[in-house]
Image (tube, rainbow, N blue to C red):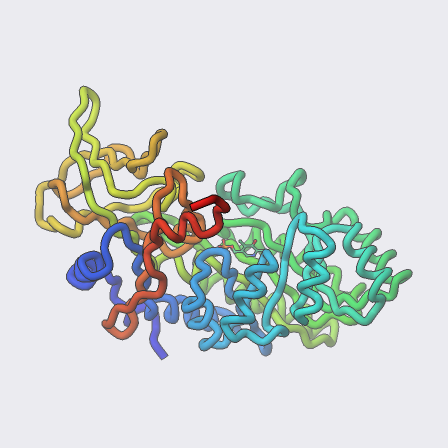
Length: 411
Ligand SMILES: *Cc1c(COP(=O)(O)O)cnc(C)c1O
């Protein structure tokens, strides 16, 4: 087993990153398999409970090779669409290791997931009633509760607030219980996911307690799923979740409640960002250096079509010049080639950039390639996995034929 301390950041090995850019072209996503494994092990070790299951929230990075890597470590899979369910099954996950947590999808889509045998997590009362009427107690279901505790972070990624569309409000618990009793529902799981950025274990515990205080009312319960929100550092000195402290506090509380109630439950989490963010590096090449009256732009061979987080969430991605690590620091505004405002970073201190230099964006594992598009009819980047010091292609770059493959037209 590898621990996090033993995994050196790939940044310390610029050569292999540059070699990847040379071999597979630019722009390019590169992932470090050792880092993914180490993050999984560290999170797993942070909890001290009898039964623990970590389900990889695969919307963060959906390459099937990544799904397989976590399956090999014993993870389950957290999915939010029927397509992710199908990817998970194709990757080799057993249906019972897949949780399907959709929001605002059709009944037909949920029926399809049920037919695949995966766990269904229901997040509105109408659906709960519908499935109760049709399946009674034959369908084990998990209920997504919204405890309305703000875990902090950006409002776009915070899903616990009172007017959030996610989950069934904790204030509607009496209604859930009425449905459970009249329709004989088989509720085997309680779930919450308050959004990103757990900084204070006590705030999280407060939300967790809201679920734990209800287990009395759910005799069929097998698991409690506390979602995710583990924060990783994006900048030096960034405050992030103290996983060991968090794990200790949650485990103590969880064990205490299970003991008091004489129940044996599985503790579940569904991390996305924590498992893959830091394993990813996005490499792109500088096409243009442009001095204006206000700043110096470095214009890249990529844009918000490949990495939308800075424009979408004001996300910070640290940018390093791989080609000139010893150059003088200069100030640049790093921008993309898309025909709209398309800025990756304002006034960044970066080692002097020349045209043709390869820049590297850090924290590019989660919600980066997964959110890439073909806007401006650009191809989505290739993806490479580095494992045991060796690199291999895990997604080829697209071609014009890929762009046209779904269009219907006369040749
Ligand atoms: C997105 C999502 C996650 C993962 O969140 P991270 O912040 O990436 O860890 C977990 N659970 C659900 C239901 C989600 O929608």
